[in-house]
Image (cartoon, rainbow, N blue to C red):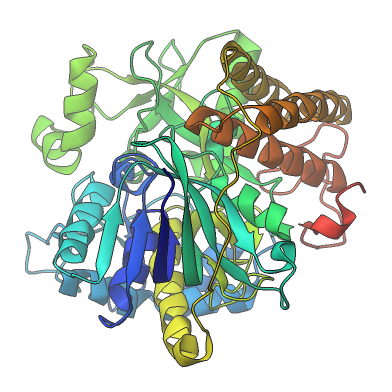
Length: 535
């Protein structure tokens, strides 16, 4: 039997953004943090590189701002960039206070207590990290902290279905009242009433066939917000990480950019380096340039992968700085101290998302979006390495502080109707879900990937509309499941990505089209609004 719950704050997503929000809020608020799988199933746990910030005496806010603006290919919102960078030191200090075990410097001749590395697009060493498993260190620390708070309820195996909107219930106001959530333990859809709802569900890289992301990255928050009436921005900019491990059993293991930051070389199968032909920064060029270069060489030569080689460094250096990559590759028979790593680009980060302001506000009252779910304007047309985790912490803390300011003004929603499953039956054709899931991700990879054309985008739009019709019909007649909910959300996000890409008549940053290879003189964000859904 379905259940009803009441919380002051409902946080959908248990990664860096969601946990930071929960930990920043005061103890008198009852907070639910929902994870649709295990608590560690999100992207945060798997982040390797680190957190960018202005931390030592040789770096400046202006330098970090300018690096970000350059990487964003002219499309960053400078106010958002400055807001994020100016708050980087306090956010990282907060993480240190929480007990995150960042790697310390092992020499006295330094300007900062912690070891800083450099990644693509950065002009300084400003990436604080915990060896090459920063995400795991941050997540484990924040989770342990959250478990110490009796007001924070961490609830696993909860799949958000849709937001509960006052307008759809015939009530006054453009407000979110909570969410309907599938409890995977009971297979019932429960009702969560909340004064404030926070979407921290991560990105949508699972819309592509090859991705570095875990299975949970299905764009759930973006799709739910769109259906609720929120605007979305710049969803055509999907970052493909240049270097994911190419191995039939590796699935989605990312080879951290920090390897290139510490001198690893990209090579063709014959051992030839090639990045100098594409950019003077070579391996330290921004990710979009490196990913396109690899994609170009793979297509030109008809090869399955290229190689990332750091074997010219000492064994001690490699094992000390990259223990996770070293051990993981070793399980597949690759000793990175002696041989190069086979790598391919894979969908990695969603630069666009739900349009928000500096407090994480969406278009809907009492609804916030933070982290990869949101579009803040920070990343522009291409995210610079390690700015994403920074964005999580800065905006999560800002959203939490805004909730604190609004606390006494927002009443608890009352008498919310329970989910009605009286007219649906159990499905006996789940093969349809599996087939549509595979078809969607394949045509997105083929037609809306690293290199695009008008013809490819039109084909993709035609296919996604057919799929959405089938999915909506299935959704209307059968009980919901995690697979069906995720497929429904992926189809929505795929449609938004395709339409956003069709609107951009230029090549900028991560959006590269053969039909419009040049930059446009007009620098504008791509904003889609539900009211114009059929444009």
